[in-house]
Image 1: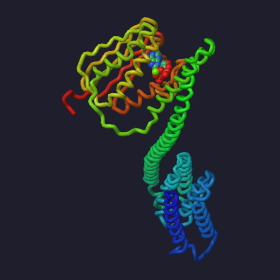
Image 2: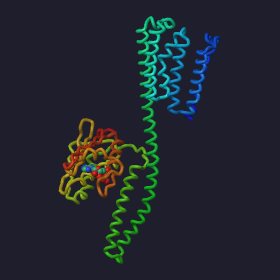
Image 3: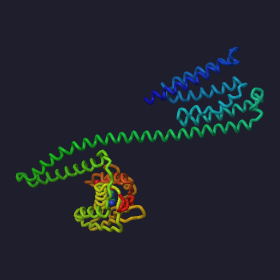
Image 4: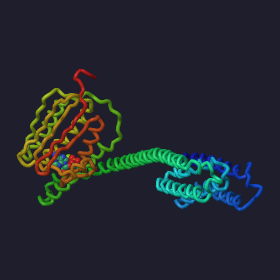
Length: 404
Ligand code: ADP
Ligand code: MG
């Protein structure tokens, strides 16, 4: 639909241009009665240029673009030579590169600009050496003034090109981004539907396996295999539930007042026994009353993911520190571990779906965290050194306790 409109406008403009060119051929043209070679050249150029312009929407090739640029240049220079008495032809010469701006091709523009500068040098050279001001006195008499005017006009044309081109590039980028996010949205929805469908059979299979596990007729060896299967199914289930929590369509939920202290306490209590598996304690230090505007569940999910990662990265017996405080208008939460740490490349990969260095990792935790942080206008930063540990800093805009 848009394409048709653009084409319509193009044809209207081109037909107007052709009409003007034809008017130039027939209305009050002094060469028309003589009908000599120069007039024939004029006709040939008008016909060629018109054909090329009319053909362009159908044949959008680079060679046609170059041909149009060259033929248009030749046409304007020919007008200048064929009708020396029409001094305004010089103005047309100055604006030849403007033609190529319409094709939104920067290489073509620079080509046209260079061609025009070379053309003008040759033209002025011809006028000064051969013509010596006979046909073009207005140029010969003030050559410097004309050169300056020509340079000024090329700068103006370049400026127009620069602004138009920049806008075009921006628009193209924007368009590509929209297309990309649309694609992601569709594939995300599709993947979520598939993930959901996979979860049901998984539950059934897991149920039967659990049932077999109770069955005394199976040997211990077989039961070991069954346990392994259940374990793998649990991992698959975990991946699917984490994935679904990312991919589920966002219902705009109103944010609530989240008591950071309260959530941190409940999360550390929850993860306490998880930490004990490898003798990792979680130490919590909250220095201020902190409240943020977010969703309690999502904020909890964010902290669980980050503290769990810190525990998983820690060596046996290491402490994980969690601090929360208020800095100006921000609530700042630090999760500090002395674990394996990350290289800069590893930090850069965080948040990429399925990026995980763990044998049983899902690689979705950080992606969920990034989404939650972004959703509530927060920020997440990582400071890490390989082998020495990681500090994850989360900042959220602070809200007053009494405010709504
Ligand atoms: P998962 O925990 O399932 O692997 P995440 O998205 O939570 O997925 O984390 C991705 C990867 O980032 C982890 O596999 C780990 O390599 C790295 N990572 C995250 N947090 C830390 C941390 N505190 N210390 C070291 N590495 C970390
Ligand atoms: Mg994780």
